[in-house]
Length: 299
Image 1 (cartoon, rainbow, N blue to C red):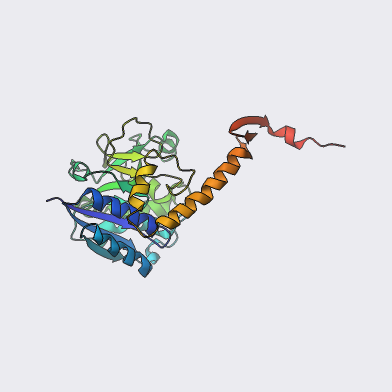
Image 2 (cartoon, helix red, strand yellow; image 1 turned 60 degrees about the horizontal axis):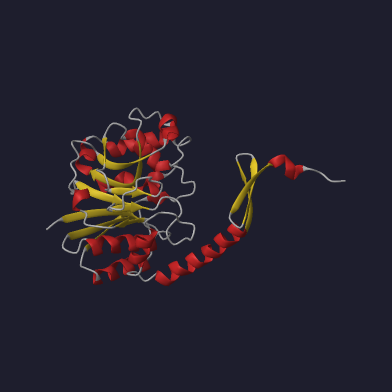
């Protein structure tokens, strides 16, 4: 029987998404032993109650690791919260665990995790999914020319401890905190530039992936989340299937309907600036007009 140790960093803003992700893991790995490890600082009791309700799908172990937010004092958060940095301390906070699958809360599992979990590290610190972002590779001076998404990582925590990777992450974060665009993800890319391996084909799907395959095991909803009508991830219908196993389905549907109305209004008539031009959209037809035409003064 397979045993999976899966880590999430969760706060009150994302625990409902996390519940969907957990449900998807459980439903597709009924015959496996699963431990969910929650990195948190002050997560509400409702979240833990919801996670325990998922045991109606199958039993699992739920472990909580409390993280001191002061550890990350001085590091930027921008549009995120300090929770985004919590994954930096996985190796030290889980000293008896050598291998974990880290998942962002906006992920789902579509199949058995064995093909993902059993991939060989080949002495690398992480196995990750590559993002196509040449400009960031250049900005961060990545010698590997490979920028990865940190929302799904198979982590060799044994090597993290042996190579003092946690310390290196913190040192790098403070050194480059004024230039990073995607915060902890950029720092992980810098420190692990030559200590990573790419997941095998069809392991991970990122929202903007152009692959035509429909056989991906883990899906990461980068950007707009699946409870929004604006979400264009091809696996958004799968997410709704797993959402039915949580207590938040009606809440998710309410959000979807609200965004659906906003999407309709935007398609009906909208105006926005794109690359110095004004883009008008009427009934789905887009027309770009030079900005100066909107600055004409009439007598």
